[in-house]
Structure formats: structure tokens, C-alpha cells
Amino acid sequence: MKNYLPIVACVLSLVVSPVALAQNAAETAELQALRTAVRADKRALVESTVQPTPAEAKKFWPIYDAYQRALDGINRRRVVAVEALIGRDKAPSDLYARTLAAELIATDEAEIKARRRMHNAVLKALPTRKAARYLQLESKIRAVQAYDLAAAIPLIE
Image 1 (tube, rainbow, N blue to C red):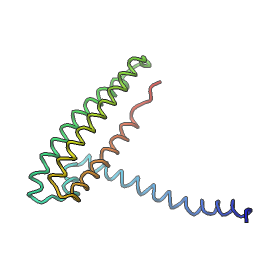
Image 2 (tube, rainbow, N blue to C red):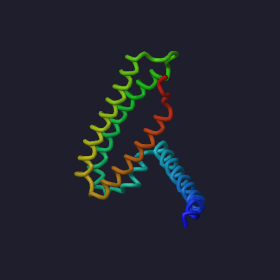
Image 3 (cartoon, rainbow, N blue to C red):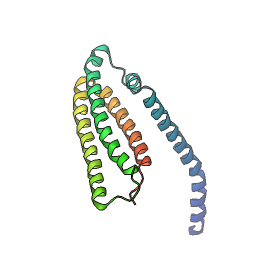
């Protein structure tokens, strides 16, 4: 029986691999579709996902707009820090690297604080399921944007 274990493991890996690859391709396509929809019109994507009633929309959109303004400011801070790193001709000093790391952590903390404010307000403005759907969508969008940013930032030498 022990002699068959490697053969069974090999067969299972051959059967599972195409399924995993297909799932990965589907996830990649889904993320690309999300990325494209956000670039085209994020507000329309949120509208179609949340589908707020007129009364809910009256409460929700000001919260959404305030959060987007907060994110814009945070993103500008992040871009300034990253552009300074990318634009350097030489390796950064230890002090510069420490300052950059601190600034990136500060922007992450500011984003979390803004998200927490938005989260609490959205839960009061929308029914729980709609609020959860919006919060999930926003998290997915931010994850894709964070991945894109991480892919663009070179590691410090």
C-alpha cells in the first residue's frame, strides 16, 4: 500500500492542477474586470452593486463622497512618497529609507482611520446587507489598487 502513495499523490496533483489553474484564471479575469470598472466609473459600479433606494442614497452618497475625498488626500501623500523614491538616481540613505517607511505606514494608518469612520457611518445609513456589500466592494477595490501600487514600487536597494 505504501508503494502506491507516491503514485496516488502524482495522479491527484495532475487532476487538481488544471482546476487550480482555471480557478486562478477566473480570479484574474474577475480582478481585471473590477479594475476596468473602477477606472471607467467607480461611482456607477458602487451604484449598481449597492442599489440604494432614493432615501438610502440621500444618506449614503455624502458618506461615500467624503470617504473618496479622504482617500484622494491619502493617495496623494502616498504618491508623493513613492515618486520621490522612484525618481532617485542613487540608492537612498538609511535615514531616507526610514522616513519613507514611516510615511507609508502613516498613510496606511490614515486610510484605516478614514475607512473606520466610513464603515460606522455606512452601517447607520444603509441596511446591513447593503452596507456589507458596499464595504466588501470597497475592500476589493482597495486591495486591487494596493496590489497595483506594490507592483509599481521598486524595492529599496
